[in-house]
Length: 445
Image (cartoon, rainbow, N blue to C red; front, side):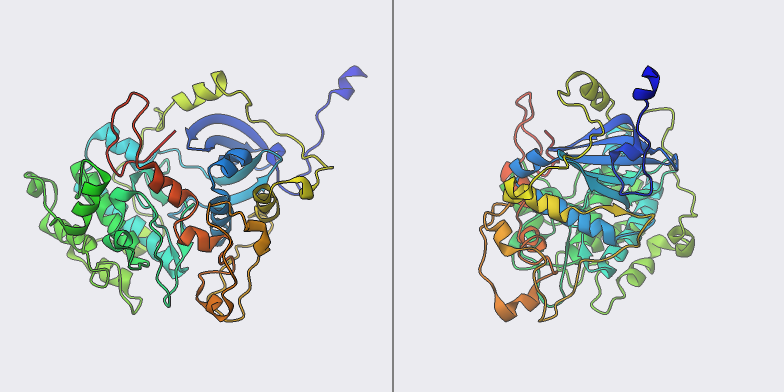
């Protein structure tokens, strides 16, 4: 009789997805306000990565708009070389993304472990990433933060793009102007603030290719100002041993990706033939792009499955230091939205449930129709979650906005708000030991 009262409640897998549907396994990552751990779906037994973000910290970091925007973009995306969203939901404390699990680690981890990657390996990665970038651009999405930290390997060694919290839709009619991303990987046109579009991702890919092969970035500076000047004006130079590490054909591809004129940059073509132009480069001769696109090519490097391809201290921190460990909790059925702050209400109403097994992908992007209307009450963000004050109605000018989320969500991120502004304002602070960080490096708490 007593045992019966302690029997766990049956899980309703036909109802809305929630944290009770998953076994919580090891912690594998930590960011400024979010954490990542491995989970297993209790019914399908499939392993996933669970990225969870504390709502209060999200508000404090002025990143509410970014979280909602990332959730919406990920619902639209489904590609073999992207870390795809499978489920999204929230409880009273956290917002949850359930994503494809990548056990091979990120390219920053492998670059630091191995020192340098061979030309063969880099060429393979560039080919797969190029397909992902081209796919995003076909959806009118620009990533804006392409770097080794945001390129993950699966257990076989295939690459996948992740971290879409400053990605936005772009328009052929109106250029983006917000300074967003990681400085060392930003294209010149981002820094000049004269307007940019999809070609910025191809520049970042060039920086990544150079860094992976030579262990350092093509443009460097001791301060952010020096680094900016180098990106804008310094000629591209090669290490003394470059000819032993990369072929002339490879150099030409990297050089063409790092073309300062976005209209001449490899990967960009106004007529939509960008990928065809890249595929035609001699460096990729002999590469079967159909096999690559089908994820059937054999990766030249396979991560060691017997070793942790991530920082193992995350799990210890979760066990020893976490004051409020993650666990499944029922939502408060008596919660009143009117008692929440504007930012918390925004997350509550617009970080909606997604379950890929129950509905197809959809886009919140509606182009630039003059009849476009904001999908969120403008008064909700009068005190903007990204620190940008509420702006007046633009009338017919609204047709130039990049999505139906417009000024409320995507427009703020496109303008450099939220996490984009946070990354820029941090200016890469010192490490906990007082050492100066390299400009353009990824800032982690």
